[in-house]
Amino acid sequence: MSKTFVEKLMSRKAGKDVTAGEIVSIEPDFVMSHDNAAAISHTFKKIGVEKIKYPERVVIILDHEVPAPKESSAINHKEIRQFVQEQGIQHFYDVNHGICHQVFVDEGFALPGKLIVGSDSHTTTYGALGAVSAGIGRSEVAAVWAIGQLWFQVPETLKISLVGKMPRYLTTKDIALHIIGRIKSDGADYKAVEFCGEAVGYMDVEERLVLTNMAAEMGAKNGYIPPDYLTFDFVKGRAKVEYEPLYSDEGAKFCGAVEFDISKILPAVAKPHTVDNYCTVEEAAGTKIDQALIGTCTNGRLCDLEAAAQILQGKKVKARTLIIPASWEIYRAALKKGYIEIFIDAGAMVLNPGCGPCLGAHLGVMAPGEVTFSTANRNFKGRMGCREAEIYLGSPLSVAASAVTGEITHPGRFL
Image (cartoon, rainbow, N blue to C red; front, side):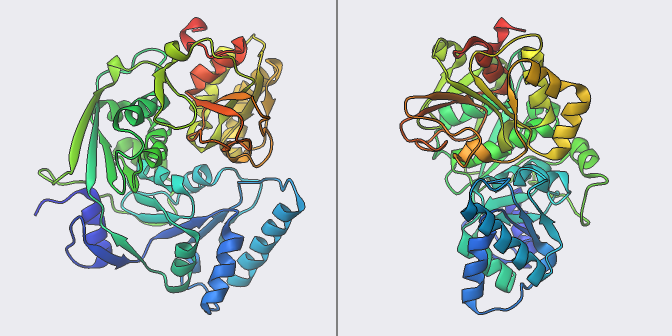
């Protein structure tokens, strides 16, 4: 019987033939958590189990409030460090590494054919490298730590095909916002989303990570891109363990299929206060902004910083502009290429890698009535620390162009 990728992987993990809709109990290959690992450890201790069953599968990355902006955050981090030492957790990344989803990828945990869970909704990111990766709750992570297993309902798969040639000024962030605007934020509820088509084949790994990161904003359980030579080249020398890629069978049963011709897509914006509140940049043009944010786990990679530098070089920003590389590996690469100097000369503030302003933790919290144009993945009320502020989402090109003018602006004006 022909199967989708997620059915094949869960069948292999369950040790039996399973199809969409069935409930299985299986062992994840890796389980990721971040600053919420302290709360998870409290739940773990209440279970009554003294030691994590598979500490070699546990990855903890501090990134949400780094460095600690207040005493409670510092206490939280201290508890995590103590727990890591007590449990003998080897895969621990302290405050000087970067955003969890980028570090997880940089360090070679995201691999084809692996089942990964994490206590963050954007764990879907790792599917860009051919994994099934899903966000789960804190108590579920504690259970995985304790017994090494978790139950899943095998999801149906929605196939999203991208065809056509990428037009000038367009990025994968624009494509993701366009898709979400079309199918809406619940269009893939508890489904696996398989991104395929010729246009995906042309995208490099950094671009693909944007699609699977944004799969969470479609309601997807996981996003997946079939691994190819670009995937294998990327993980070569990084892979923490052996891996075996899996692919959907020809003739596999999908719950739906949607095709997008990316040559017809325009630079996009998600207006407040939902990610599916879609319009084009031209339709939102002229909206005044107080702050521009380029970075986060969605668009803080080297190609994103390169795009921003291309626009900001030799110019001065009119809006407060925050630049956040997704990891220190990326920060160093941007430093060598001269992007950091370009940002500073333009009047932007280059912040240390971390989540910070994306979730309103620190380093860029908004005031009532202010507007931020951001490359992040969410724009809900209060997301950046103030319920009376507004967040627009866009691509690094669009946000950089808007930082220069002080209002939402099409990037073509500067390219």
